[in-house]
Length: 633
Image 1 (cartoon, rainbow, N blue to C red):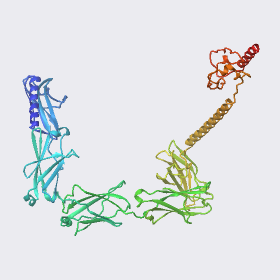
Image 2: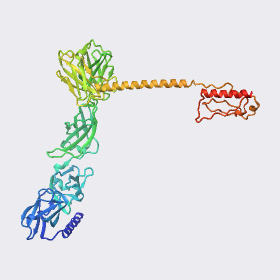
Image 3: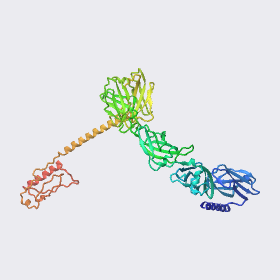
Image 4: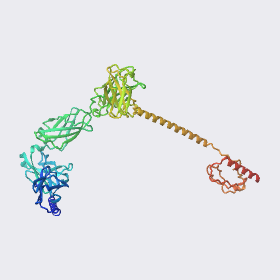
C-alpha cells in the first residue's frame, strides 16, 4: 500500500511539473516501449512533437542532466534506446524541441525477479520445508521489497532476512501435508512485490533431493587410539538409517597453518558407528566438522555439521633434527665445538616435554644444549669424531638420529674460507677460497639471528637458514639486512675434511665493519667520559677535605670574662658558649657593656655582611682593643 501511494504521489508531481514547467509549442508526447521496465532489460523512450514547424532533428531527450543519443522515427518523432536498464526508483526523461521543454515522464525501473540459488531442505523426521535464496536488487530499496513463497499454490509464507547474513532471505514454516510425502515432485512459487507491482518465479522441487538426516541431540561416544578414531551414537531410531547414510568429515588442525584433511571413513552397517585413521601428528588438537546424507545419486549433505574435538595420542618423534651441512664451529681459544641443526616445528614434536639429545660416538655429551645448538667443552682437535643428534619427548627419543662427521681440526684454518666481508649497501657477503683447494666442491652459507645469550651464537627461538653453493661462487646475496644476524661460510670437500664454519664476527650483532667501527667508537667515548667523571670526583673530595681544615685566630683574652664579678653574678640567665663568626648562632647573648675588663667598641658596619674575618680586620681589631685596655688600666 505504501508503495502504491508513493507511486501515485510521484505521478501527480510529474503531472504538476508538466503543467507548470513545459511550454505548449506543439502537441507533445513521451512514452516507453514497455509498460513495465525491469533492470537488465532493454527499452526505447520516444519523444514526439506534432507541429508544422517541428523537425525530428530538433528533438532530443535529456536525463540526469545529460543529452541522450537520438534516432529519428518519423518527421515528428525521435527515440532513445536503452540496451541494459539499471534499477532506479526515480528515472526522469525530458523531451526538448530545440531548447524548449515540451514534455517529461517518470519511469520506475524495477529489479527483475530472477533467483538462481534457491535452496530448500527438509529433515526426514519433520513435516516442515525451509528454503532460502539471495535477495536481488539495489540494497537501498530492499526495505520496500516483500518476498513470499508458496507450495503447490497454497497460502504463501512470508520470507525474511537472516540476522547473520542480510543478503540471504529465509522462507520458513512451509508445511507438508500427509499426502505430500507420497508425491515426490512439488511446485514452488516465489513472489516479489515492489512499488505496487508483483512478480512471480516458479520452481520445482523433489523431496528426495532436499531431504537430509536429522542430527541426534546427544553427543557421540569418542574412542581414540594410536591406529584409529571412532564415533558412535547410541540412539535406536538412527540404527535403521545406518545402512543408508553416507558420511563426510573434515579435520582442522588447531593453531597450525596446514590445509584441512578429508580422511577416508570406514562404516559399520549394523550400527551407527564409523572410524577413520588417526592423523600422523601426535599430541595435536583437531577440530572436526562432520556432515551426512542419505545415499542416493542426488541426495544433499546436511547444511549444518556436527562439531567435535579430539587430541591425538602422544608418540615418539618421527624425525631427528637436520644437521646443517658442515655445521660445526671450532673455538680454538676456548677448546669448544659448536654443532648446529634445523629445529623441528611444533607439529613434529609428537608429544610434550620436547627437547634434543647430542653426544659423540664415545659418549661425550654436550655441556650446553639449546633448540638449535650443542656445545662440547674440551674438544680434542687431534682426533676425528662423529656427533649424533636425536629429538626426544616424554615418550622417548626418536628412532632415528642425525650424524655429523667432525675431522681432525689441528689445521682447520687452511680449509676455511678467507676474508669474509659483509657489504651492508647491497646485502652481500663475499669471501676468498681456502688455502687448501684440493677436492674442494663448494660452500655452505649459514645465517641466524644473533642470540642475546653470550654463550650462544644463534638465537634458538628463531630458525637457522643455509644455502649450498658451487665451488665457483664466492658471494651470496641476502633478501634482507644481516646487521642483526650472524653469518658463516664453510668449505665443502669430497672427503668431508673441511675446517667447519668461518663466522663473520660471531656472537655479536655488529657483524659489519661499519657497525663494528661505530661500536668501538662508542666504547672509547664512554670509557673517556667515565674516567673524566672519576677525576672530577676526586678533585671535589680533596677540596672539601681542605676546606674542613680552615682555622680562625682571635686575640688572646678577647672573650675572657671575670665570671666572678658581681655584675655578672646578677644576670638572670647564665652566659652560654660564645660563637665564632661564620659558625652557628649562640644559645645566649650577653650584653658586653656589663662585662668587666674591657670597653665595648662599635663595630665597623660594611655594606655586605661577611661570614669570615680576614687577617687585616682582625689585626685592626686587636690593636684598638689593646690600646683601649691600656688606657683604662
